[in-house]
Amino acid sequence: NAGVTQTPKFRILKIGQSMTLQCTQDMNHNYMYWYRQDPGMGLKLIYYSVGAGITDKGEVPNGYNVSRSTTEDFPLRLELAAPSQTSVYFCASSSLTGIGTQYFGPGTRLLVL
Amino acid sequence: AQKVTQAQTEISVVEKEDVTLDCVYETRDTTYYLFWYKQPPSGELVFLIRRNSFDEQNEISGRYSWNFQKSTSSFNFTITASQVVDSAVYFCALSENYRGGATNKLIFGTGTLLAVQP
Image (cartoon, rainbow over all chains, first blue to last red; front, top):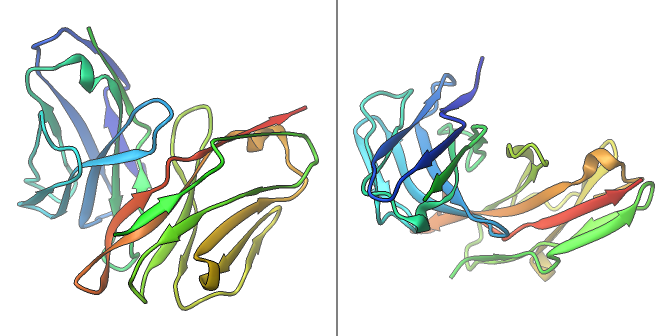
């Protein structure tokens, strides 16, 4: 099993550009999450999903959108990138039975210039 | 409100020293879960342990041990005989509650950077 995979690993965007961060898990987990991690800070939840077709906002959703059309995939869309979105983005997943135990992808480092 | 506090921002030790990372949490709920994650310099987040609020037994896994004390709302992590490979940021997390039940959402502390010098 690959676990949680994320692409790309690193990306530079210009202000105003858009992009989609991809996340795929092969563990058949119902729950999926997107976090951002700023230098010296903990993880802040952007969006999460409890299953295909169901998504909800986390702590810092502004400037982002998500969709969940399949159990495996949970892409994060950045519209009109801003320098404040420079961060490391982590995708995670967890099962119904493993309360809270989230398994993380390797992260995507995004630089907005 | 639920909260996780890791007051130690950075800790530096010399190899083979023991080190304890502190985690204090706040919750009004009786059922909750606590976690520790490790983030090595390579950047990935690695799950270390999960404990539920009804199990206060200390846990030991090799050089790692965890001390859970509900009386002080703490879930501390000790590394015995530290090694350079233990250098990482360590995060403590608490399961968020919704209407009295633990959910799959986590509340993370801000992390403790552990530097183990050779």
